[in-house]
Image 1 (cartoon, rainbow, N blue to C red):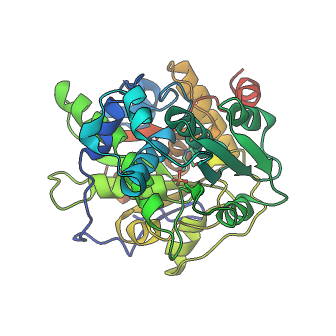
Image 2 (tube, helix red, strand yellow):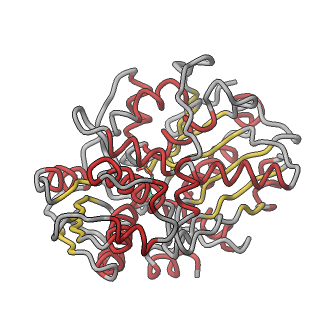
Length: 382
Ligand SMILES: Cc1ncc(COP(=O)(O)O)c(C=O)c1O
């Protein structure tokens, strides 16, 4: 029973024994030294447990990371820190407070961080620039919600809205960099891989926290992880954390994309990398990306067990279910849960047969953002 349909399929290319490089504890050690660090909450969602017939559905709630409403700052901060170490000779043992670190950064005056974003990553980069006393310039696609633009400006960054899609904004940002303007992009292409690799590593703080919390409460490791895919960096971090050979229990992974921007879904189904050209109009702004990061693609192709596409309505319904459970989750944040519930409602056998889940199993869902567009959020959740 595979349950394959136009919005779900099991990955026949998925490999059992693939060599995946684990991510060490460097990023979480770094994040713990930043003022305001706090592990994000891990909460159970009983309504989803009842509906899916599993032991537990854990929601990792990323609606407040260092005071920002998404997980993205974890990647940007680790990448900028690694770049500072490499370019400016900052050493790990030289600082124990952010003020001290700032003093150690004898960067050239006017050094700027440049990036493209559909919202969350750009805000993370802008915040990190402020931490380290650097400038920030952020490119955004046409049609970006005013609230998301203003949120980035409020971090002190310059925002430029380009006449085009997210992928056009990335191309624009990449063309505007140089020795005094570092590109901090969360997607990779041939020749630009170092920074995106560090960004992937930075996200691992999320899963180290999950492992610690589950161990502390003597709960079993997850049997299934649901992860949203935009350019695939978050999914790459999930794969590197949960599928490396040293891990005893390796959960299944479902990658969830937005309707109209399902480049991983299309690529894996075709057996070769495919782009999905814009405009991408789903309400899940963070997932409106038409091209996968080239470092994420092989990890996704070989190690993500199933792919799903979320409709806007499925994401909205999950937002309401999460809100009823006390968790604020935006459109992209709720898309993973939304897709899973939609698939199960259409064809229940996918849960037991296709994914092999039963009443003793547990699911980890990453709610990757809070209400990043508050007006949209209150319209949907009420
Ligand atoms: C809230 C949210 N969730 C998920 C994602 C997907 O992450 P990635 O682009 O690394 O696949 C993004 C990307 O911007 C996002 O903003």
